[in-house]
Length: 114
Image (cartoon, rainbow, N blue to C red; front, side, top):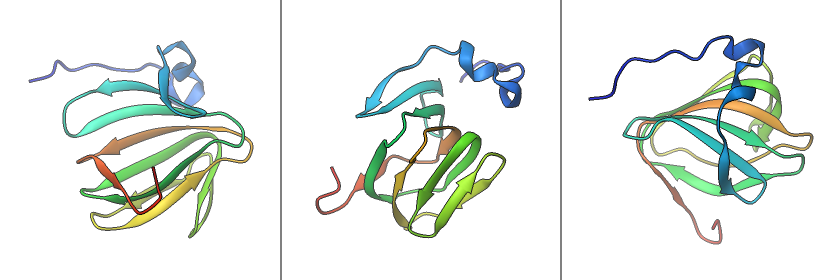
């Protein structure tokens, strides 16, 4: 079982103090919880993307800074995005963004998606 923790001032840029590491090309991650469900902060460089993938469990995303998009729309800071199990999308950020994300289970990349 994980210990309780807090990330102070997350919405006010507290994520800047977190230790990030490479995740995908142009995307860095700080895992706040490594076990399922995974909770992390992702930092996208301008132009970064994550290939098309299928969610094998619920995913929730809160955009903290900047914006990201998928085929359903563009999501700016303050937007909560909920992707149910079985849904698919590819994600990109033209100008870069930071998101708080929770994966109930790992994603599966689909045909040509990485």
